[in-house]
Image 1 (cartoon, helix red, strand yellow):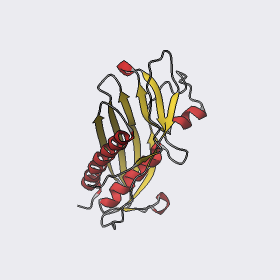
Image 2: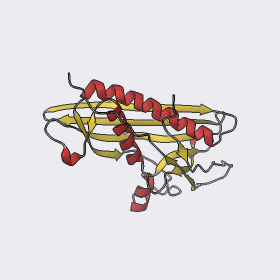
Image 3: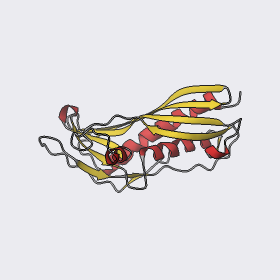
Image 4: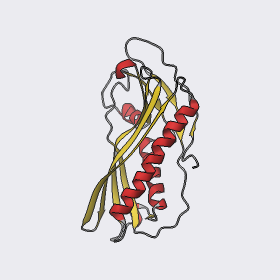
Length: 213
């Protein structure tokens, strides 16, 4: 199977033992493939994607909700950890990407591949399913104490409304890579696995909940 995504501009994280809080960061971009299938199910509009993740130590332990921190949170796709899971830093998305934007792209692909026609919210009509999406988890963690493993999660809650009808369901994805040496290809693989499982689960959930019966 072709890899569902590629991860570019990876700056490999060198995790050295240190004390106190670290603001070590790197930048990585993620691309999501486009689908060319035509819709045969109802029209769907994604109204909003909200990042509800709770992240601490974004600015070296400062948990204030300043605008720069809020904007930074929207870019965080990976948490680096010390031994025992203590925070060590983050991997950020590039300027042209956000966590909400990537989830929006993934859901658009899952909808299109499932046969739905995705429309703008401005074009939504009485027969259009309107989706509100909440991101519960979207990140990758690095565990140097656990055989140098990478684990990634992507979990969302979807609230769908069409007229008087409403549905609520969850979609999740997970990936794990273990290696004695973590390199760029391992980052690519863990994201590929996570997005692949997310898209498969999304297609099943969307067809089950939103298709015409």
